[in-house]
Image (cartoon, rainbow over all chains, first blue to last red; front, side, top):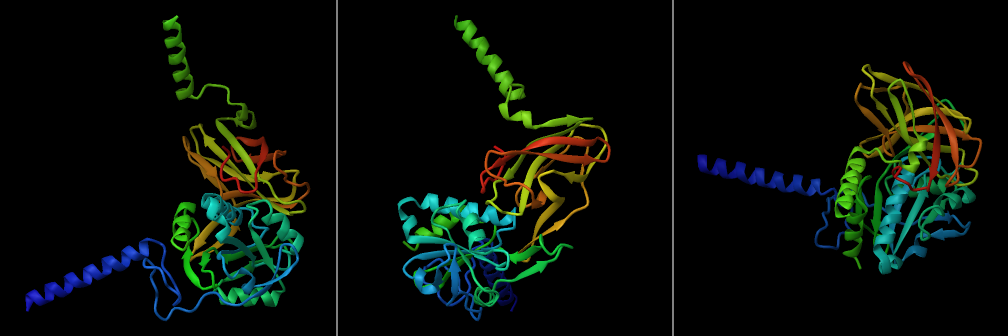
Length: 204
Length: 158
């Protein structure tokens, strides 16, 4: 009886260690689109990604279909953010540099959560300061609300006592989408560029 | 001759390890009453941007704690000390009243933590520019430094 109990405890501890280990890698995968061997699929988690209609930083109307055939690195933020967003943009720029000859297979996408201030020219000025492959996406309040919903992005305007210089709290994940627009994995803020590059190379 | 070379190597080692060689960028630092402000930089912002952020290092070589209580700059209409923080995957930013620097300690304002928030930029922060920034401490008073505008994705002064 005691032996069975001990065995059960050992099994439980092993299982816990495995779960914690997977969690600690920071590469927990949501959705049911897992194809690569190292991915983790959380059953029942909501689907992330899908169709969108937005406007790029050149003023052209684009949809998710325009990105088909390429891996997408999607990051949500706002150009008025002087700290965290440029940092993540810099990380993605380094990723693109490190991909070298394979950079053409991936496209970094910056989606604003602040469309009222992030107009097309503002977006252009922002993304063009980083890697030339960057695509900035803005749109109407409704269009942005729709893509935020599809990517499970949370953002909240903080008035900061000023209607002009308000701040926006927002989720800071970077999503790696496959060539069909399905989620491969989510990178937490602060994930080193080389880890992203390694994950992207698995898909090439 | 050999001895000379050896001596100069020793001298170089001393100079490098003790940090007493003339770093051309250190002109952008300032000291007052044991408070040293150095490595002051900002990220370039697109033309027409109305918000920017500046970063710097404060060293307190004094014997008492020092507090940074205010920041001012002619480059922006409103200048505040802000802190970025992450909670449950949501990145937030909020003003903070003061930053305390214990004696013998240094505080680095850097991306992802504290920064000087410049709201209502009066001039473009283009790469290579410099603009003045005044830090107000509760003991040392005002210290004015020059902010060096680096590239848009710069992560540190050097």
